[in-house]
Image (cartoon, rainbow, N blue to C red; front, side, top):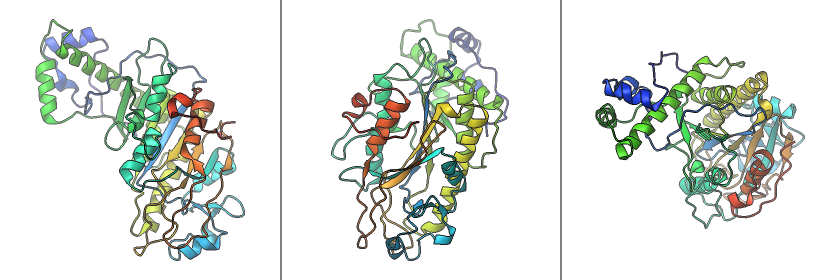
Length: 421
């Protein structure tokens, strides 16, 4: 939930910020709200978006989620042959049909599936898969081929290729990340500079290191006549960021949620995304991370907890959006850097694999199951062969949801899927 701590009075113009600084009201008064880094300034002009503005929420399942114990092939004897201790018992699976079911921790997602608001895309991966967390995450975030290294992310290139990210005259953040690992996600990196914004699950970010705060207070808290030099730019950047943080803080604090979110950082992150959407922040893309899926040892309990966290959070988020009549504007999509191997290991866990299913959620989608289930007629320690390229899902989100040609963003044409209603 958003913090209830009172917010100090913050300036709403550059002029007021510099005047206050000249009178000795420097950064120290606002350091509780100052960002950890000033690399992503987001300016303060608020322009309410159109009511039909489409919004994409990306949910990263960091560590490599085990797809076979998420979408369970409970009618396939090979599944239980490969997983004698980790296989989900047939009588506990939440059925999606005669052959597939969800992990028992995914009750909320199971309900959304039967309401037609959840699509499961089976067996998603890419050619020549890489089993390194770092490299495979990079491939998914940049939408590159496995033998290609790109300096920009797929959302960053979307922002580079379209002006639809922010209304004319607005400098509000076009993309927002919450609790992304290692700061701003690589997904957002563009060839051009775009205003993005980052915050913690429980609100806006905090100040950087003590040394950084002291230097900023010394330099920015003193009068200056020349705003054209580097210090002037830093003053403007800091002021702009502080104003945006004040705006976001107020949006989070005034939000009246219409669903009960789980008391987890992931639940709080989704609650705050819903608050910013409801407040009319003209942001097109949000990014949130749920980590811990690298389950080499004793997977059963860890993954059950994580999948319950995911399902309960997404269920509350969708219910909240629906209650605010915003659900038709938002498409939510999960991704993970890879799945796990079909056979369990000697530590009752699973090792790095290749393909896995992903979830697409929203009121504007075609619910059901897309793609083909992986063949499990495999020897021990052999990987699944993917059947759906993840860039097909990206192309669908770009073309059919965000209204952007996918070719310039993905560096080629990928067949779209019947995901969007």
